[in-house]
Each structure stands twice: as C-alpha cells, then as structure tokens.
Length: 378
Ligand SMILES: Cc1ncc(COP(=O)(O)O)c(C=O)c1O
Image (cartoon, rainbow, N blue to C red):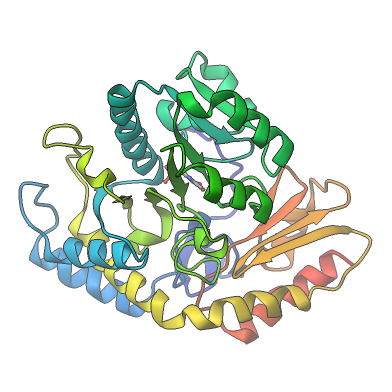
C-alpha cells in the first residue's frame, strides 16, 4: 500500500453516498453516523449544496485573498451576527488552521501584555499541527512530538477545584483560555455549569481572552448555532471548521470584542483559503442550519430516548445531535458488528460510541439506526 494508513479504515470501498446512506462497490447500503467526521451537516450530496458548488466551479475555482468574494463576506456576517457581538472573520482551510490563527493572535496579544500563559483543558481536541497540538488535551497525541509550545497550563476538565487552583496560581500571567465547550473527541462531554460560571465571572475581570473551539460542536450540531450558547459564556474568539465548508475544506476564526484588530496586514495569511467552492456550499449550509435549528434538539432527544437502557450501557450523553454512548466495558468488535448490520459507527477507544448524524436526518432514518443499536447493545 502506498497510502499511509493512520486511521482504522473500513474494509469496503465507497461507491457513492447520499443523505445518511453510504453505498459500497458491492451494492451494500450502510447508515452513516460519521457524516465525514462531523462535516456533512446536511448529509452526503445534498442537492442544494452540490448545485451551489457546481455553479461556483463554473464561475471561478480559486482567486486568492487578493480578490473580494461576496459570498465569503456573507458567511462572515452570519457567523458574527449569530454571536450578538461585533467582529470579523479570517477564513482557513481546516479546523487546526483556525486554531492556529487564534493562537497566533493570542501570542501577539501576549507580547503586548507580557502575559505568556495559555490555559487549556484535558481531553480537549484542538488539532494536530504543532500549535494546536500544544493545546491539545490528549497526552498520548502530544507526547511523541514534545517539546511543543511552553507556557501551557493544563487543567482537568470539569474539575472546579483544580480550575480554581489554576486560576489562583496563573491568572495574572494568563493571556487566554482555550475551551471546547462540548468535547467531541473527548467523548461528547459538556462543560459543567459551575466551570462555565467560573469562566464567566473570572476571565473578563482579569482581561483573559476566551477562545471557544466550535469546530465539532458548533454550527447547529447541538441545537444552538454555537455550542457555547448553552452555557451563558461569551468568547472573544471562536474557531470553526468541519461543517462550514459543505463537505469541502474550510475553516474560520471569528474574532470578536476588539480582537479583530490584533492582526494587521501581513500578520497572517493563506494561499487557498477561503476556497470559493467551499464558500458556495458553506453558504447553503449556514443558512439551512438556521432554518432547521428548532428541530435538532428534538431529534437528538428522540434518538436517545429510544435507545433501550441495558447493562451494556454505562451512560448516554446528548446535546442536540451530538450523542455519546459510553459502554460499561470496551468492545473492540462493536464497530464490525454494527457494520455487519448496516450501521457505521465511530467507537472511541472501543468504549464510547460517538454519533454525529446529519442534522436534517429523517425520523424514519433515526428509527433504523436506533433499531440496530438496540440489537447491538441488548
Ligand atoms: C474540536 C476540534 N477542534 C479542532 C479539530 C481539528 O480540525 P481539522 O481536523 O479540520 O484540522 C477537530 C477535528 O476533529 C475538532 O473536533
């Protein structure tokens, strides 16, 4: 094999995909709960997304940041307006690049203030490039690449006592806190309200920037446009990726509350971003998500309320259509068993089933998925 295989690949070849369905080259149909790792908010090959992308492809495929793109301006406006604040957006090609842009801005701010420390939480996934990896809360991912950025203060997630300790010790030297409000790769775990209140009551007072990583949980996934909106906190910077490009590579860093003036011309850039075709599809996604927002929490609640509680299930966590099912015992065969029944599931560490289905999934499609999961977990 000439391809580097760094993922646990499935043993079939995909022929085509539509909605929540993936069809293999043998003609088998699978129900997809991966959605391209949380990318396809409107499912595979959504007609309006495809149409917008095709039309754009015929106009121009790439022009670079030297030229104005009206559609990019339109998405940026929506991303800012949804925060209720003022700000500006820098587009990237991926999630990790959106985090890198945020990190660079934070580093620049740090030079002005002399505050060098950045706080992050355990089990937060911020990306794999060296900057975002430095903030990543998974030691096993960081370790092989150390030394990474220093001055990172690591705090156990949802541990108020340790959070208070870190604040007491480091807050005066801290420039920013990076937060994934609902941890995706960490197993679909929401920040608890006590920690959120601590953030709300402390950060602003000490002039510490709050950066919310909404790459997985943002853009309607949890039933609100931004996941932080469940918690009553207000970020200064938001990072976005995954769903925003309508299936094509796109990320965004939303700079709010004055942080939009940190970068001056020449401070940051990208050859490709924002790709006009990604932007064309993304415009459809961002608008459609707003239209179906009211249905998302209801669908998520329906999904989990129909999963039969058995001794194989330790806990189910759900916000909107971001669902995590923790098994009582790890089951290394569960993914294959699900595949044999026509269901594609991501099982983190053989223990947590993470479901990120398309946000426009039909109830009948959920019923099919629920039926298979209930069989598997009975
Ligand atoms: C919360 C979060 N941040 C950052 C990233 C990195 O995004 P990308 O893989 O597009 O670089 C991911 C990817 O899974 C993510 O879930």
